[in-house]
Image 1 (cartoon, rainbow, N blue to C red):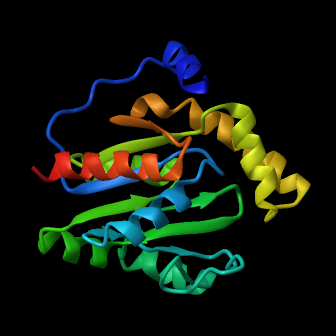
Image 2 (cartoon, rainbow, N blue to C red):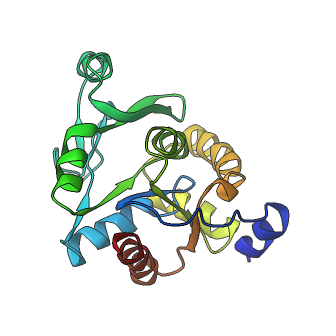
Length: 203
């Protein structure tokens, strides 16, 4: 199991005690973060799922304002300049992603649990900006399964897949920076584990 290998190489940090209702879900590329987040959106409407802004083009089936806010570089620059992003990063040396701050602040003020599904760089920024956030790292069952998911997705060319796999190896090594590890072998089970952590944080 990949998780056992990682536990041996990178001992898990102890959870940092009581956390806030702000949950951060991160993990390597193609691990299924978006799929798990979408499952939670569908089955747990009480959890506010943050919608990220991105400069990349929509993938088939993605809806602006639901899956992402699709913006151009000029608008992304404006969001940064006006301090409207909780975090932002360049992902895979190409597109930029960021988390609009206002909807998160509003949802937390209403007492809701907020889930951010973001990349490793973004998770580190959120941890710096909001130290009480609960950090959750999603792992694949095995490395081979991660490769299979990335290739099977069919949304990247060979060069992009190679780039993302190199990035994934670096991202996996950062799992000990997180409060909780969840292995995404089954989407419904992984989503349930995230929801359980959200219940713990809300107490």
